[in-house]
Image (tube, rainbow, N blue to C red; front, side, top):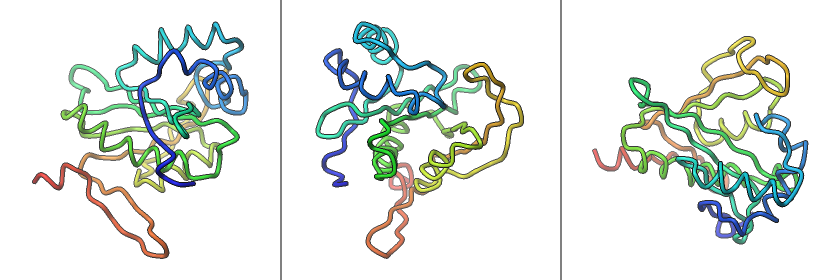
Length: 189
């Protein structure tokens, strides 16, 4: 997939039809805390009340059509140095490297938007191997297993915790070479 076709941008109400295509798919929402969206009206309500008003929820776009999202929610008070990151993409776009590319775009933007952040955390269900691979490809470190930690779709589930620190390096693959690129914080020091 050409990187130039992939972009991140805030959600718009005009994304409702594209959003409905992937947000109505039970395969996509299986690991999400919200249920599949069933109608255009529900899609509009979700975009207006949740996506647009969220501190940092960006639409993953392919040729400017919404195919997924990346969401970052900073903590508050004494925990404001960390934020939770989550993402999803339509099942038609799985295993194409799109989320990996979108995450590589998102990470520096998040640290720029929230300069007090030191840590991004991702919680992933143990059986969600695809999501674990995405996190590892962009440089997140697996920290451990949280037993019976997350409640989702009526069950308490084991979760793996991953982290990416503001001082960490993102990993880039170019051809057969492995390159490490420092994020913008290291460029300024």
